[in-house]
Length: 267
Ligand SMILES: Nc1ncnc2c1ncn2[C@@H]1O[C@H](COP(=O)(O)OP(=O)(O)OP(=O)(O)O)[C@@H](O)[C@H]1O
Image (cartoon, rainbow, N blue to C red; front, side, top):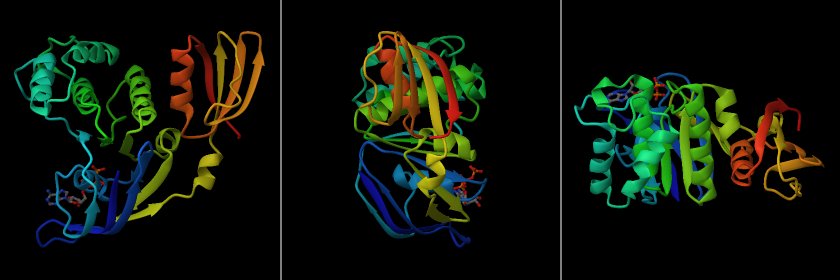
């Protein structure tokens, strides 16, 4: 999909912000990048989105990108719907009839007619998220997407990430909370003062999820990411490997199950 090889970045004559970064983003994979403020995460994402140019090293691949910046610029007078239609026409790939249902799903306060400049930070971010996913990009890049969103939108965001992976596209997102990154990412990296290192997946296997479903039963043991499945009539209890929770929940909901419980557990 896209690969960074020995990428370095400095702004002007300043100190290096990225140092010799190697990152492979395969198709159908969700990559989470942890790191503290100022460590270089947003710079890394802007280079992946081709919005900033590396100072050294190589970027291989030019996927079609959907990008949610850390601060969505929402000063405009136009409505959320008008903005998204405008951006969709520029992009050329967007099904315009998908705009209102997505804003509805994200529970945009004020609805599609809300002028952008009246929106709160979280609601503006929902519009930015909608813009990023509407074009069904090959690579969805999300800068701190969970921050500022309400709990209901957190669930929808998790579903959107899972849906993106399910259709074979990739996601790269940042967050400063380890639990959030481990819960949603297949591969976890840490950015520290411009150095990107892979976080061992051993830590990840400690974070399985127990999901209790109610619905039409069936055999869940062969589902991707499901390490254990116990069916008792209409009750199904799953142990799901970290990084697969959203995809399994999405499949369950699509198959008519209701979700009764989601909790961390040992694998
Ligand atoms: N356009 C720019 N010009 C000059 N310096 C910049 C620019 N953008 C970022 N920097 C600097 O690069 C460093 C890394 O910034 P970056 O935004 O990539 O970090 P971050 O990890 O995303 O931080 P945060 O979590 O606070 O958003 C910071 O020291 C920042 O001041």
